[in-house]
Image 1 (spheres, rainbow, N blue to C red):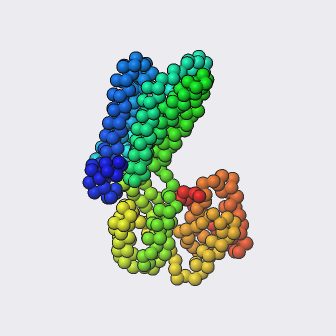
Image 2 (tube, rainbow, N blue to C red):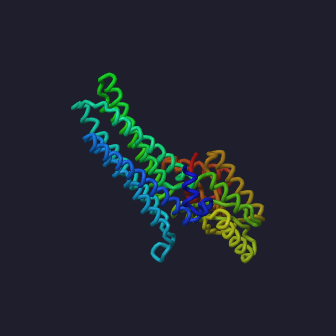
Image 3 (tube, rainbow, N blue to C red):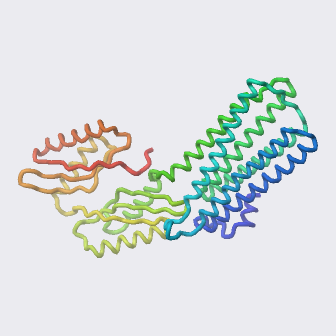
Length: 392
């Protein structure tokens, strides 16, 4: 069913990097969600009135409110698909993250409400009526919600949409809540045990955990994430594959939506290279990365010494000393400035985020001590940095 709907309503469905195609996926997901919840609302409301059941009527209006997440998703993908303008030169893609955050709040609200009502039922138990018609209606609702969850999850993973994955989590919450109601009703009908409140507490915890997880996943790209290690490897290997690029460091990636990423990187080039030649190479790399990886890359050139044997020896010496102290620490931008009484070793030191201030100072002290054992004239000028790569 999912593939049939995609085939019918999404043109050029394989081109998921295109914002227009992503918008079509988002609109399809939202409309399907609205229709499914509207059908459940109408069915439950009609039967609730027919059998004069307050609980069924209440559940009908719950489905009506569930459609809110689909409406939020619809608005979100429509706004996220708007082109860049003078106020927002990087586009509007981050609206999709904000929409997913709003859905996560709805999930949390469902969990908190269920938790509150469950405590009330434990303190003031109410008999759960075993009604075959009610069980049948709830079972149909579960089947529809399970399909809706799978539908949104499949599309969300396909186009890496946080709002669709959030909507899938919302449907999962509804499945858990309704399943708990069905189980409680069946147990009450067969044994007379009133476990509704206890089941509700367990389900509410799972629902709130899902809401918190969605909120966390949504906030991370808004706050700024560390670079994924696989993506880091792909970009650096591609940049370093070009002639005259000796090495790279300080790769930073900014996400302006699932389809719009901007990155900066420092590329090391020999300090005696022809400037125009180096500039031409850098321009070519930036164009190729945009074409092949759909990332707008800006490259900063760092000249490094490749011919002075004494400088290379000192750089290797510093690298070896630091690796012996901590293999998770690295250096770049190494320079040597010779003076009459001092030899300045200038470099950037990249340390893990796990380092405390005390550990930083201890490492710096050890580095200086080890280098001065080699030559008392060495004077270190060290700039501390943290890595932008996600830690394993």
